[in-house]
Image (cartoon, rainbow, N blue to C red; front, top):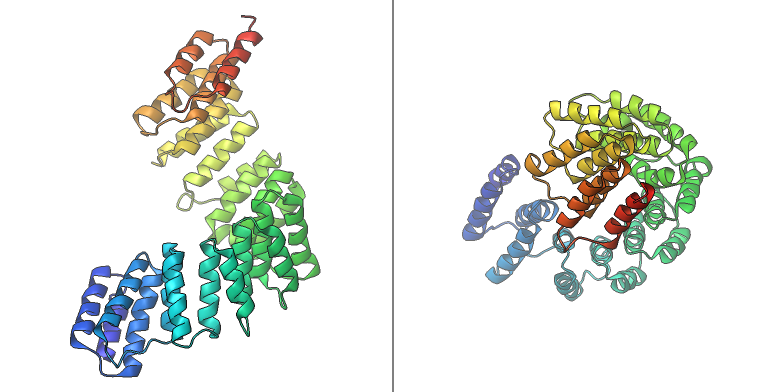
Length: 396
């Protein structure tokens, strides 16, 4: 049996090898209760946390069909099975597992119950999540955070805040959850106030996840001072260097807070190996925001030199830059690339940028031709208002 466990460890990256070992185990049977649960829980964990959570459910059903007296699932087995239901976003299946946990006596097990709170919260079954939470004789920080995160995810920020304020010991995860909730609901002043309370009053150090949660509020409020402070903190903590998401968000935040120079400095500090499409899109969008069309076009070409293929967001950013920078020919060329080379199907925003760009330069007939070519299923009145505004501006 130790040999099989070591084999599992060795081939954990191979799904096919895992399935073969699993089939062999089921076919031959296992004669040690302790080793049996070690093996099965290892498989449950692998499936539930990996890319094939449905395999955990299938394995559980297969083992039940065998009716082997040696198999007795423990709290870890059910916790992993509930996690699989969570990742599959199947609350109905999760409810069935919930009923089974009550039947076998795990209705008060903190790990199983916490997994249920998380499953119901993620799947939007907030009444059920609250009920399980309320019936728990004891809870840990993971339990509280699971419900707070679930409530914020589904827009119940009032209930989440009430729960957060009742929490016996608030950790960085709970602070991050409530900050993210306010940020998602565009209550940016409250989000930033909570962030400051966490850092200044409570002395809790934010993680990179906290930093990512507060960036939307900093951008929307245009709070350059907070942007500088987080930049400095990220440098000291190593977030800027090790997490490209933080660096990309910093570029975007600086640009939206009106400091394109700092955005460029952060961008230039990223090594070629770490720089990704989001990095380029962020700086191109920043240049567009500041009317620096030539810089945006040059950055787009540099991005292509690094063999990165733009997506629809990158294309929209460069079209916007060309529109505000008066670079009509360049904009038309980028639109052509979008169709011919990038194989990106334009949406109404791309067409809107193109028509605005042509309209600004008085090329009204071309703008009208493009407007008439827009597929009827995506065309809207905004396009024609843009075109009408251009005609009026040029005295036609």
